[in-house]
Every structure is written in C-alpha cells, then in structure tokens.
Image 1: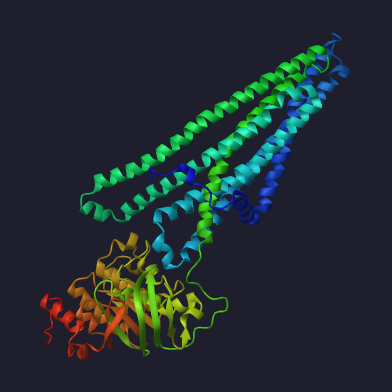
Image 2 (image 1 turned 135 degrees about the horizontal axis):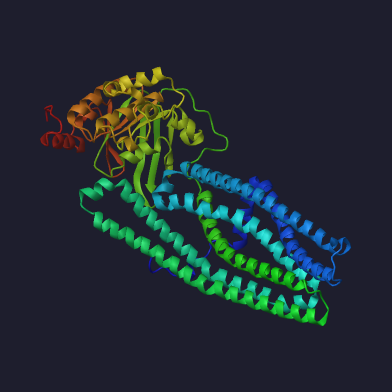
Length: 604
C-alpha cells in the first residue's frame, strides 16, 4: 500500500454516472429531502432579509433624529422594521429546529436502510464472492462508506442547496442595492469556483487511498480478534501490534497529506473572502459619501459580504465531503453491483417430493483456473449413507458444497429426486439439506435459539426432541437455565463435543431429506466421538447422508464409501468390499490401524 500511486486511484465510473446513481438511490427519501431543501431555502431568504432590515433600521433611526425630536410618525418605519426583524429571526429559529430534526431522522433512515440493503446483498452472495473479498473491506464499506454516502444527501444536497441559494440571493441583492457594489465585490466568486474545481481533482485520489488503508487496518483488527488464541499461543502479540501500528500509521500519513492540502486551501479561500469583504466595504463607503446610497447600506453590505464569504468557505469544506462521498459511493456500488454467481432462476421449478435420490452427471468444477472435480458421475439411492474419504485436497468438501449450490458446476449437472438443482429456488433447495460442519459455529444466543436457528418458529417440544436425539439433553440438564443457557460468542462456554452436538441438533430440526456431515467428529476425543456416532446412527435413518470422514469408525457407519483422489472417484463400494481390494482405501485403513486411530483390529 505504501507504494500506491495516488494518480491511479481514480473513479472507475464517470463522475456523472455515480452522481446519477446516488440521486437514484435517494428516491425513497425524496419527500424528506425535498422538504429539507425547501425549508433551507426559506431560511436562506429569511437570513438574507435580516441584514437588510437591520441596515434599513439604522437608516430609519438616523433619519428620525434629523428633526431633533422623536414622534410616532418619525419612528414608525423603525418600529415596523424591528417587528419584521423579530418575526424573521423567530421564523429562522423555528425552521432551523424543524429542519435539524427532519435531517436527523433522514440521516438515520438513510444510514440504516443502506446498511440493511448492503448487508442483505452480502448475505446472498455466492461463496465464490467471499473467496475473493476481505472481511475488513466488507465491514468498512458497510459501516464507514455508507456513513459517508449519507453525508452527501444531508450535507451536500440539502445544506448545499440552502447555501447555493443564499450565495445566488446575496449576489442578486447586491445588484439590487447598488450595481457598482456588486461589480466590485462579486468577481471573487468565480475565482472561488475555479479554486474548488482544482482542489477537488487534487484531493479525490487521496480519499481513495485513505479508504484503502482503512480497509487494511480493519482487516488486521478483524483477523487478530478472531485468531486471538493463535496469536497468544505463538507469542505474536508484539509483532501483531507492530503490524496494526504500521497500518494505523498508513492512515495517519494519508490523513496528514489531506490535512496539509486543506491547510493551504482553506486559508487561501479565507484570504480571497477577506479581499472581497474589504472591496465591498470600500466601494459601499465611497457610494455613501457620494450620496448614491443610504448610510445603513454599509451594514447591510458588510453582513451580506460576510455571509457570502462564510458560505463560500462552507462550500469549500463541502468539496472534501463531496469527493469523499463519491469514493465511498463507488465502493458501495461495487458491492451492490456484484453479480451473484449462484442464484434462483426467474421461473424456478418446484422442489419435488422425495427422499433424497442424488445423481451427479459428468460434474466438473474448479476454483478460478484450478480444477478440483473432474467428470464425477454418481447415482446415490435415497436413504443411502455415503462416506467420502481421500487425502487433503482430493475434492471431498467441494463435492458436498455443490449439493446446496454453494457453488455451481462448471460442467455437468446435479439432480435431486428427479429435478436439476439449478432450476429450483435456492432457499427451497437448502431447506431440504441439513449441515453439520467441522467448524462448529454457534451464535451468541441460548442453546434453544442456536438449535432453532434454521426453524425459528419451532416449538419447544420439537427443539427438545432433536436435542435428545443429538445428545444435547445430557449436558443441557446440568445447566441451571437449561436450554435457555447463553453459550457465549461462537459457543465459547461449551466444549468442542457439546458444540458439535448442538450443530447436529440444529441440522436435525430442519428435518432434511439430505444430511451433510463435514468431518463432524474430527475435533473431539474418542469417547465423545463414540457418543456422537451413537446419535448419528439415529440421525441418519431414512435420510441420504454424505459424511466426510478421516476415521474408520465414522466410515463404518456408511452404506457406500467413495474414495477420492485428485478430483476423481477412484474407488467405491462398502467398507468390507473395499478392504478386499488392493488400492488407496486398503492403504488408508492400514495407516489408521497402525497409528492406533481405529482400536478395532482389521483383518488385512
């Protein structure tokens, strides 16, 4: 990142396209934003009126003193101006409060709606999308970039409209007061505009670079929080702190580069504003001495000039917000535009009734250009328990990931109970498949909530039934709060075997026709493994089950053993049949026995 060329960090889409898309996304909030713009414009008119009323009041006061005595006739113009001024001030204050509350509501509505939309898009992405994305980047875009995008609507659009009208109104009012004043004071405005255009082009790539550095910092933080046990186990705390410090220093470096540019730009804008203010005062004073305009106009022009220069400085600050918003919008659009490689067809076929008859027809698959499965053909009758064995990288996990369409085959097709799975609704397909992963992920919730994750509306009796069948009941009864016991983040308060039983119960509650066990007993001891296997025998009844196994004790539960190597099925048959053949399965069993993994003697 340190060597990144800022000049190459440009928007990949034209600025106009991004702006149109930003405005298109604002349609649901158009009414709120329109009311905010109108209120801002009314406030601008009132704010423009107030200096005029004060200036004319000064003139009226001086004129009333010319006679040497105040009468109602002489002070009436002053009184009416004071009443109008008080009314305009009260109106501006009231509108300011209403506008502040409206924009606060609008900001939070945009923020929550956009985050919900992006979160939904991320959740529905194919697994291949997450293979290429970093967690820190997704977090930053969902939180930081969406926050910057909503700033565009409430600050740049609404507040910018108010300020823009005020600037135009101020210029028009100066021409109305005296054209000579306007001609001297207003030439600084186009200089402002030209400076802002140059500045925006300069700072845009810097914002782009800073967002990339923030992604990197968040990614390091996310990795170390999730992998804190590994960091501590290897004593890597100092090195990881140093790595995070380097990422934070990268953010600071880019932020300071932006700060230096703003430190030069904003004083320059302020100096231009002061030149305009002094020029306006000078010409106004000269015109008063000529008798062309009233003396109170000096105050009016002074206030208008201050408003003009102040608003131009606010526009200058908004340039930074605008450029930051454009960068953030593009990053958000990259998520929203990402194509879902595995999706539901426009006219999905219904998922047929059945018991889980699975057919692989000439299935070939690979990750990018790396082939994993090659021309796989299988016909698995309903209710068959299938064990997949083979060395690491042989394609076992990939094969079962194709069943729920986590990925789609590059060639061939998969048929379940007579229907091509690519033609049915993805959610309906996955509702018929239960998963027990090797990574026993549990949520920060109660036991019952984790078990009912796939069926939130499940009754307590159904939850307790699957818990009993999966062996959860044994340890749940020892907890004071039973099934209402909170398990902590990722199930930290449970042992590995307990977590695995909860995941089995979670899969069972779905009552799937197909059950996938991805090395479900790999991370538990032999005693716990036997207890889980006893439960699995009950679980696998009348279901088509795919078991990825590295232990013979688990393989023996299967009706059919598939031996895989380099993406192909090189042997298939029952445990007994394969033992009678020379081949990789016989060698696999021999190694298990020699290592003492299987304590039952195998006749080789």
